[in-house]
Length: 218
Ligand code: E4P
Image 1 (cartoon, rainbow, N blue to C red):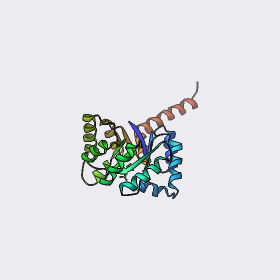
Image 2: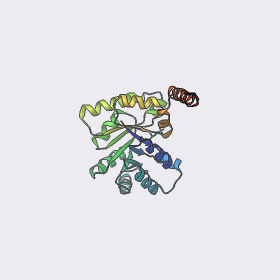
Image 3: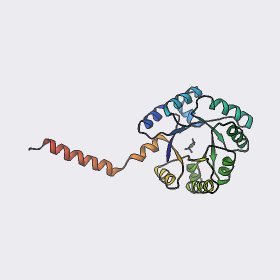
Image 4: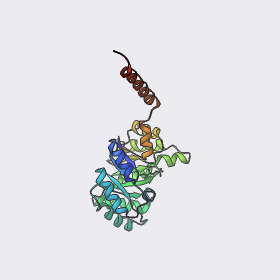
């Protein structure tokens, strides 16, 4: 399973890349606002230079024509750029138009199997179902992933499934068990994945024994 980092924070991206856990990056307008840089095109270019993998930047236009124009501009920033388009009626038109021009699209804000089916038919390279936000309203986010993976397998769609809105380590475990292509994970959740109390306890015991050996006779 590929790990994308769900952030626009360059320092976090560099740190997680150094751990070997950065196959790509996803951003959205909220994450760009959190990064606090108004020169968003420059920031996306800097992220692409570090990541050397797919980097999603989201359009902010709401009409198809505007989305296509913005998508073409975003795609022109760097060969690694992927254009994120919201899954709306207008968004579908933009997904079909941009995909038809060979621009990779990440269909975002997906909350149903039908939306996932439509964006695959429109030619999206990636689909982003938001599991955490579904869990938040009492629905089963991971069930949606399971259903989309099954439907895409039934019809052999090339669209890659990005599990989005990941909130905790179990979302990552379930994504891998269900065979999702990618999980896009916030930096704080990636850091949690490596932690286990028995690892810390075991290491402390090894170090204590090693210190005893170094301090002992013979
Ligand atoms: C996906 O690409 C989105 O950027 C992201 O996963 C949204 O997550 P949130 O629900 O935690 O905002």
